[in-house]
Image 1: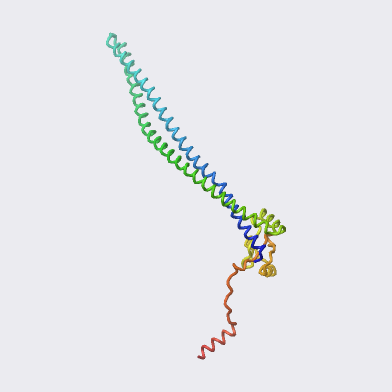
Image 2 (image 1 turned 90 degrees about the vertical axis):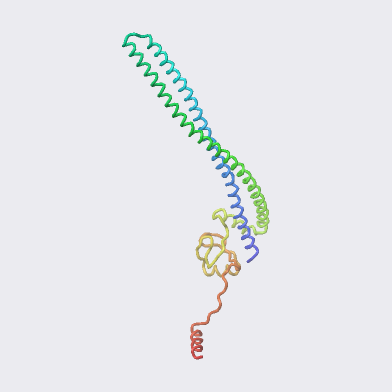
Length: 258
C-alpha cells in the first residue's frame, strides 16, 4: 500500500475515533442530569409525604377541638336536663344530647382513620427519605466518575488531535480536500474494497477498477463517491492449485491400476 493511502487510512481511523469520543463526552452530562432528576423526584416525594403528615396532624388537632366542644355541649345539656320538669323540654334536651354525643363519636372515628393514614404515611416518608440518601450518594459517585471520564476523554482527544494534525500535513492537499468533502457528506471519505465490493456502500466495482486498485491506485467508487483502496494484507489467502479434470481422471485410473 502506498504511503499516501496509508496516511489516509490512518487519518480516517483517527477521525472515527475522535467522533466516537466526542459523542461519548457529550453523553456524560446526561448521566448526571438523569441522576439529578431521580434525586429531585425522590426529594419531591419525601416533601409531599412530609406535607401529608402535617395535614393529618392539623386535621387531628381540629378534630380534637371539635370533639371537646361537642362533649362540653352534651355535658351542659345533661345539667339542664336535671332541672327541667316538662316532658317536651326533656325530650328536646335529650335530642340535643344524642346529637352532640353522636357528632363527638363520628369525629372520633375520623380521628382514628387519620391515625391509620398517618402510620402508612410515616412508613412511606421513611422509605422516601432513605431513597433520597441512596440517590444522593449515587449522584456523588456519578459526578466523580463523569469528571474522571471527562479527563480521560480530553487526554485521548488531545493525543488524537496531535496525531491527526501530523497525518494531515503528510497528505497531499488535493487528496485531503477530496477526503474532507466526502467525509462531511458521507460520514467517511475512504472505503476499502473487499471481494470486488466497496465496503462503504456494498456495491461492486468494475473489473478494470478492481485490477487498478490491486496495483495500488486510489480510485473513486462509482456508486457512493468514496475514495477506494485495496489492502493486500487483508486479501484472502491463495488457494492451493487443483489438478485439471482430465489430470484428475488420469490420476484416478493410475491409482485403480495399482
